[in-house]
Image (tube, rainbow, N blue to C red; front, top):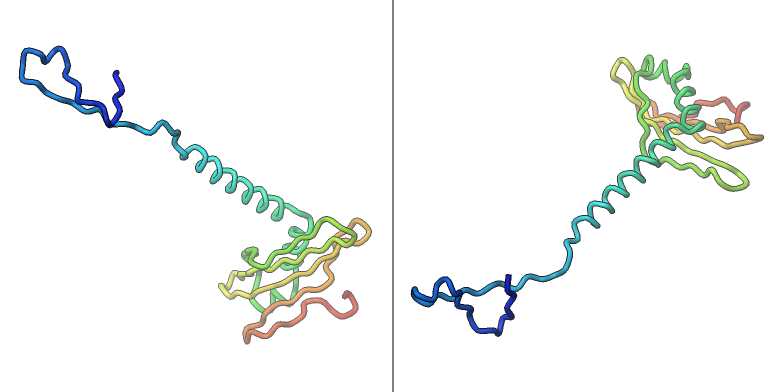
Length: 153
C-alpha cells in the first residue's frame, strides 16, 4: 500500500490505464495509539481499590463488633423491633494507625417491622482490644439518644 502525502498528485493505477483516467486519494491516518486501554485500566484499578476498601472495612473487628452490638441492643429492639438489616452509611471513619486507634460507624438499622433508625457507634482500641466508648441512635421523633449507660463510657 503506497502512502501519499496530502500535497502529492493523484495516483493513476496501471490496471486502469486503458480506461478513463481515474484518480484516487488515500487519506492520511494518524499513527498514535488509542487511549482506551489506559482508560479501562484506570477505571478497573479504581473499582478494585474501592472494593478492597469496602471489604477491609466490612471485615474489620470494629465493624463486626458494632454490628453485633446493634443487633443485641435492647433499646434498639424496643424502638424498631428485632433488627433485620444493619446497613453501613456515611460517615464511616477508621484510624487503624497511630497511638490511639479509633473508629466511628454510622448504620441505617431496619427492623423486621419495617421501622428504621440511625445508629452511630464510636470505638477505641485499648490494650489490643476494640471497645465501644459511645453509641447513639435517633428515636422516632428524630432526637439523638445514647445507647450506653454512663458507667460504661
